[in-house]
Length: 88
Image (cartoon, rainbow, N blue to C red; front, top):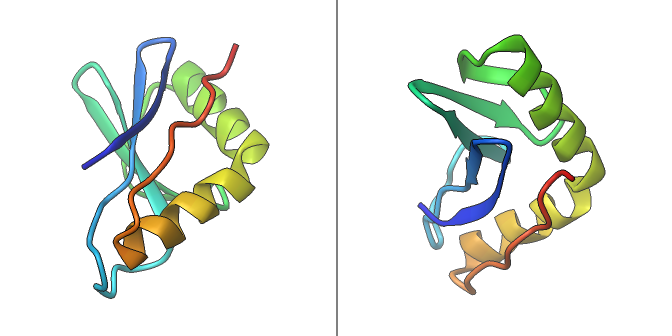
């Protein structure tokens, strides 16, 4: 699963399944022992995250929604992905 970005100890990944039907567009985020799956609309699909890190994550998603969707489409087509700037 490619890593798109990392900031404040949060690792952002996106599933790479070329040509596969794979739910709605979403990311996987890891922070320590926590993992959460979040739609590109910022809604939690499954998992949990500490509140502070969830706020950081949702702010980052909001800032990079277009880039995330572009990466989703690239990965779905099997065309790779690109890194996204961290939250600073």
